[in-house]
Amino acid sequence: MPTFSVFPYRGRFAPSPTGLLHQGSLFCAMATWLDARAHDGTWLIRIEDIDPFRDIPGAGDAILRTLADFGLTSDEPVVRQSERLELYEAALKTLEDRHRAYGCACTSHEIKTEDVRLGLPAGVYPGTCRGGTHGRPVRSHRFLTEDRVITFTDRRLGRQEQNVEKAVGDFVLKRADGCWAYQLAVVVDDAAQGITDVVRGEDLLTSTARQIELQEALGYPTPRYLHIGLILGEDGEKLSKQRKAPEITSDDPLGLLEKLWPYFGFSPLGADTLDAFWKEAVRCWKARCA
Image (cartoon, rainbow, N blue to C red; front, side, top):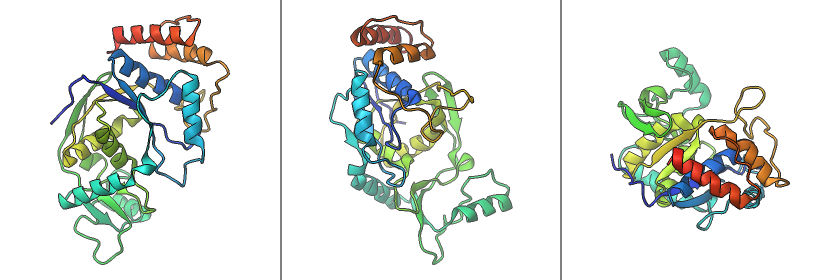
């Protein structure tokens, strides 16, 4: 499997504008920025705005302004997925040409019913349309997985493995509503931007094997992965926009950064300026995590 060398390091923070930043998303932004700086690398921001049914108008620009208030600005022009749809179309065409993608006519109800009939875990695509839709109109496009184990080493969690065909089945690349699926878009953009290291929350750990199998099918290099722990709410669940996590403000950037810093397992820094905070945080990150 082709892999990137550690240097030159290129990392990214890729928020979705389905809401404004909350503490959990700022925590992730901190990790991506610190890891890039600890490797003397490049840090990019990518706005993942490919779901018009969920994206909030203006949220992407608001996220960028808030990040800047915390001292976090992209080293290169910000990329927006909504402006890159032709890249995803080209990737799908490549996969179809290589017989690794196909049209699917199934509804979610049909998949659920077939899973029950076949005794499959809920949500695993049973492969109904692998041999064609038999005259039914195509609703979505799926990736043709292979019956093999994908392995990778997470920088924090160690060796990971998954047989995507058995755990997930042939997953969606383009949805029935015409929107591009996260799995395809993120793989295409990471490759196009030369991302060497993906730093993100451990809730996305189970997506990694799918993305690696896609990378291999498209001939892309595979970056290193670091999945960080999550900040949980009082109910023990991950802070998220879907769970109405409160939006952060820029009233006291240094105070909020100091509040989040111990969640990485470090002692409080007690910095008196943003610059001093980030300088000491990078030193600590480089000593432990780089």
